[in-house]
Image (cartoon, rainbow, N blue to C red; front, side, top):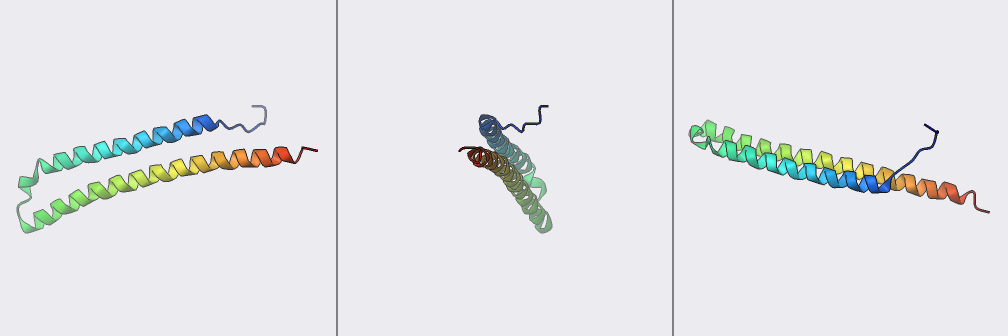
Length: 98
């Protein structure tokens, strides 16, 4: 390594696009889980079981939303780091201009 910190803004854009794909995959997993849960709904016929069934559905929704939020925040952090780097690099370069 030559001691230089380098950034590739295009790679950050690509990375964030990949994160969007991962978020979409979470939706697919949640849909599959809801379908599997729906396939066993007849086993949740008592009052307590129906509450448990609703809780299971809500857990799937909550877990999916939380996972997507983590992915979103991760993308924002990566994007902000790239923006900050380019901004600081430009500001530093300006100090050398006479």
